Image (spheres, rainbow, N blue to C red):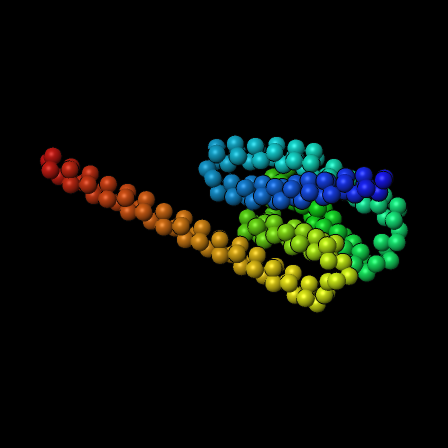
Length: 205
C-alpha cells in the first residue's frame, strides 16, 4: 500500500515538474525577447518576468524535482527488484539527464536574475524542446519496458529532436519575415503620408 501511495505522489509531482520546466524556459524566452523593447517597456516586462520566474522556480519546479526524486527512491527501496530490470537502467539514465537539464535551467535562472542573460531567444526555443524529448523518452521507456526496441527508440528520439529543431527554425524564419513585412508597410505608409503632406503644403502655397 505504501508503494502505491508513493507511486501516486511520484506521478503527480512528475507532472508538476515538467509543467514547471516548460513554463520556466518559456519565461526565459520572453525575458530574452524583451531586450529588444524600448527601455521603459523592457524594464516593466523583465521585472515582471523575474518575479514570475522566482515564484515558479522555487514554489513549483524545485519542490517538484525534490519530491519526485524522494518518492522514486522510496519506491526503489520498497521494490529493489526493479533495479535488476534493463529498462529501469535506461529510464534512470534519462532521469539523470533530466536533472542535468534542471540544473542548467537553474544556471540560466541565476544569470537572468543578475541581468546577465547569455543565451539568445532562438537557442532557448531549442533548449525548451530538450525537456519534450526527455519526456517522450521516459514515458515510452516506462510504458513499453522490455518490449521496446532500443535501436528504433533511439532513432525515433533523434527524428523527434531534428523535427523539433526544424520547427523552431521555421517558426523563427516565418516570424522574422512577418516582422520585416510589417516594418516595410509602416515605412511605406510613412512615406505616403509625407508625400501627401508635401502636396498639401504646395497647394496651400
